[in-house]
Image 1: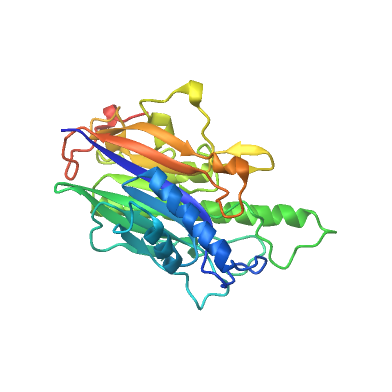
Image 2: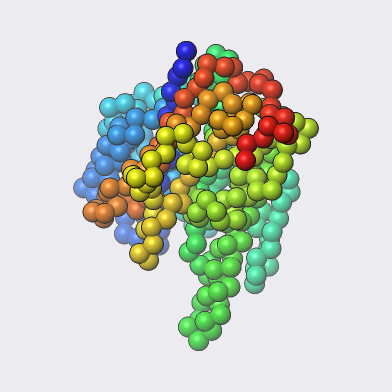
Length: 336
């Protein structure tokens, strides 16, 4: 029997409690603004009607609980998320996950980069050893014999990483600040790819990675997460595939997908990546991405309480085969 699964990613844009300062240059929400924002987010969640949703820019998990209480379909959903470190130098938004499917024990976030990874930045004494924002990992039980690893991420933005060198009379410093951001985003991507590779060695199961990558699918950081240039090792293909590109029901006549507008450019920087189990060309396939949808009409109206990101919804159709313990594809059957 076939079964449809729906996964979504949603950058809600600065969800914080009223009266709480979340960025130094932002005025805290009033009670009325908070009510409008939480109500709007709740409406979007119900419109998605997804089984599992990854969220970004969550400054308060209590605020997210307020959102869920306003929904029709997620009041009793599983909620996985951790508040930012109150002892940190500055408040940093976290990610979260809500699921109408059972969440198995052991959900966690990764703050430190794996495998003792450390990357130096220009003009910075200490190397980067942590993710810009923690990566969330949870294992979702879809069927008694099928579970899926889900990762929610929010990689470093393109906002220049200025330190103490922002001087108008030295324009090259802007380039250095932009380079720092690029390196940090690449470091986030490398760390996430390492988490995925480590996981495949220990617990082979389908994987879905979703979130705000702050870059397009062809960008090197995104390709790093996907496993650019990697090939099956010992019969295991641990690459990921952009769901948009492998969907079976893509209609170019209504291809209006984008999730962000910057300087007049329409870009898709929010992605849902899937492992070979959901690639129709793989012998390990147990299902396929049938459709990817972008909910972005709100970006035209630019309401103060709305997000500046579009929402991404992926529909996956299972073919009725078990996935845990499935034989990975052989090298000559690897999807391209």
